[in-house]
Amino acid sequence: MPAAPAEEPAAHGDLSAAHRRAAPASAGGFTAYEQVGHVEIYAAVCARALRSAVGVIRGDLAQVLAESEPAYQDRWNDEPPTIAGLLALLCRAHALTVAGRLDEAVTVLDDLRALCDGRGEQLMRSHGDFLRGQAELGGGRLAAAVRYGQAALRTKRRLHDTFGIGLTVDLLALAAGAAGHSLRAARLLGLAQRVWSNHGQAQASVPEWVAARRACEAQARAVLGDNAYAAAYRTGYDSDVDAGIAYALEPEGEGLPNSGPHPLTTGLSAGGSGG
Image (cartoon, rainbow, N blue to C red; front, side, top):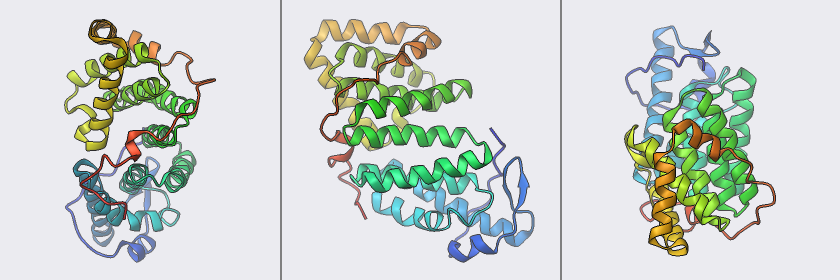
């Protein structure tokens, strides 16, 4: 993917006008603010994006929506787009999904995809596909959730994005569980845990993602029984990761029934607010 601009010290300020005043110089497809004033402006953009990400990890939806608002308002004014601006949009889409505001989340993600496609950016676009899969899952549209999840996984495999692979395999496990495919769900949960065991914080410690995975585990175990669940889980965990990803990418989405709203949108974020 194109190289991201170097991170600068955090700064505060009104970004709406600041974005429009900045005169960017292109560096690998993204904005590099070269003059001191422009560095300060971009530092403020980064600070808001990071505070949005902190809100995601804390489950504070009100913080996410407030901190991502300037990036959303200026999404078409920042030419070319910045990694920080795209991160803020991703955080906003997550908060809207968890709040059950799925149409708004999809609108944000459609815009993010257009911004990425305009520059050939793939990593942030694949994050957007992952979140679009979550939005579709939240609305019970299982075939679409799998389609977007698998699209994200293909890109993340190509980019060797281990963090993203863990997230997308978890998403595909949730979709399988929601579709009543408990054996597949258990196997994918095992594969995802194998990825997380080599990477760090499972589900990035995002409260809604952790809770959704636990609910999927409990559901699959209840359907299969302890022994069958453990066997399927172990098959996923012990598999070669590349072979496991190939299994996760096997056609599954076509013909899946729609279901009711998924727990991602039914109040798991008790510490946050829909804004």
